[in-house]
Amino acid sequence: MGKYLSFLRTPGVARLILSAFPGRLAYGMVNLSIFFFVQHTSSSITVAGLATGTSTVTSSLTAGFRGSTIDRFGQTKPLSFFIPAWVLCVFILHQQHTVTGIVACCFFLGLCSPPINLSTRPLWRVIVKAEDLRTAYAIDTTILNTTAVIGPVVATRIAFTWSGPTALLVTATLMAFGGALMISMPHSRQWKPEPREKAMYSLFTHRPFQILLIEGMIFGLAWGVLDIAIPAISTLHHQPQLAAPLLACLAGSSIFGGIIIGGRTSSITPLQGFKVSSACVALASLPMAFTLPGWSMAISLILVGLAIGFAQVYHWEVLEAVRPSGTATTAQAWLWTLEGSMMAVGTASGGYIVEHISAAVALGTVTIGILCSTAFIWFYASPRLQDANKPISPEQKIDALIDLENSTE
Image (tube, rainbow, N blue to C red):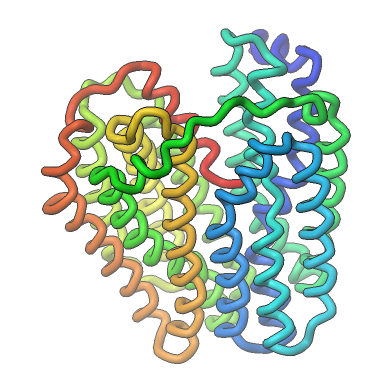
């Protein structure tokens, strides 16, 4: 504890933590804020899913571009553009009452997603000493994961205490306040981009990376359906207030699973761990289609989240073991772009499946997608990812955990 207290007294540390927190909380709130606002405005779960999915897919597809603006221009100019533009889009969305207007606003909202986390990570290397980076990343990850868990809870509480539109306005206010704090930080304003290696061609022609892209897209599609199915099913069962606690069960247990595996000393290889943990995710997902909002769904989601936490760590270790040299950040960014895009497709279609077919079919679709992903890993990907079938170095393990910790904007 003394080490952490001493670390927090390092000049610039507390300010970076406090400056990034409001924007990260806004990111944790935005999807459910959009969902409840659109559902309140249109009385349609399908439209709510479409709006949320539109924002997610445009954000995912353009994440690489926004990251490249920071590498080219530094942090101040991109943040000064994207943060006000995002906040403006939220306020315009708040005024919309037609499906066309809502979806159009969500489209531009995704395009303008501020790269808060992409800006936070490099500042740690400027603010703290090299020997304190692990402590910095540990604290930063804890805060990032905490906002991912409490954000949906806060959005839901505001939506049902006041209204969906109010939740949307609070989300915009948090982003505006946090963005102003980030832009005004001297370390952020003085940060200079590092030279970049151009390895895009070798990355996209690299067979192991192509395999991971395919697996990520299959899994992302299933996960997108689950992400919208939980609030949609809760709403249809007249218990919309359960959406946030259920999502928190999923997110919280995945964080716990990642902590367990991240601190392991086992000699299991990344590929072996990825295969076993993916099978655990598939097994844990089997009962989901038979659950209802409440304890049965919560228990199922906790088990799925725990297994996902295991799988995420091994997944990033596999990526670290097989990626081409010089693509540490690029590989992670493009993997998230395509996986996140498929998540958005799943989000947009999941609401329709719940509303027009059934909740059980939506949850069954999630399980089928996860089973397909697992089968792909075991029977197709595994023989072609043998570079990951040996222990990775401590340095690679740390890099993999850092990539996992910063896999959102």
